[in-house]
Image (cartoon, rainbow, N blue to C red):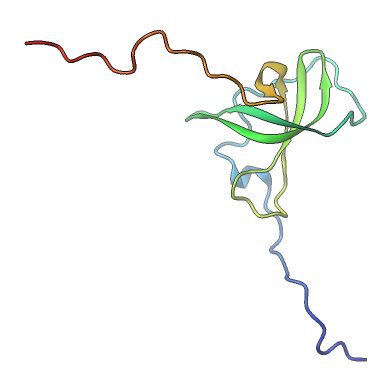
Length: 117
């Protein structure tokens, strides 16, 4: 049997490091706990707030470890191929959510009324 006529599996390009798909190598709100758990503790779907030099964004991720006030999250970059490496970082627990966070209410109107001349 020569293998002719067999369906070939698609060949994916080699994965690029996670930093190739993100605006910076690490988010500005990354924090490290004083004591890091050694073993994985779970795999919980979360929504993560990431702060970059140019903007901030909410992305889906997975919480895989946690310590007092901190959560280690694993994220795939939007638009990255399926074989791309994940970004793994520690964030403050205030930046990790189980549901979409509420936006703060604005205290002033969206636009000021036109000034009479």
